[in-house]
Amino acid sequence: MTPNPSDDLLRRILRSTKTIACVGVSPNPVRPSHYVGRYLKLKGFRVIPVNPGHAGSTLFGATVMGSLSEIEGPVDMVDIFRRSDSVPPIVDEALDRFPGLKTIWMQIGVEHAEAAAKAEARGVQVIQNRCPKIEYQRLFGELRMGGFNTGIISSKL
Image (cartoon, rainbow, N blue to C red; front, side):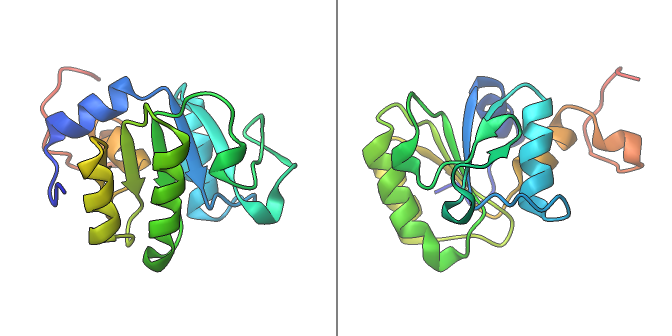
């Protein structure tokens, strides 16, 4: 488990990821899970929304799935927007369903050491207590537009 993943690791993950299953995504546009999923979609990721309470509806141009097991095809990253105590069965389902899974990403405030260790034992990278939207913006120069000092030097304007 990488408690403080390096910027290089986060960049590699975000550059190599194509398909993200967002577990716990909300159709409510003011919820963080909604605007994170929407942002990732706008950045070119294939975002598969997963929320059993909204299964069958459409979000970000995709059908909302009731569970990870309903997703057809490969998934590179599972992004978890659920409480920490809900993480173990999500990780188990992801590991069983997606043999090529690269990353389990737990959102800000979400951590589960045992589930993370289980995923890492299977060769899956685990990021905890971070947001891919924030990391993407920070690492690829977008936060600077909002007046944040990212600590990354770039010639990008």
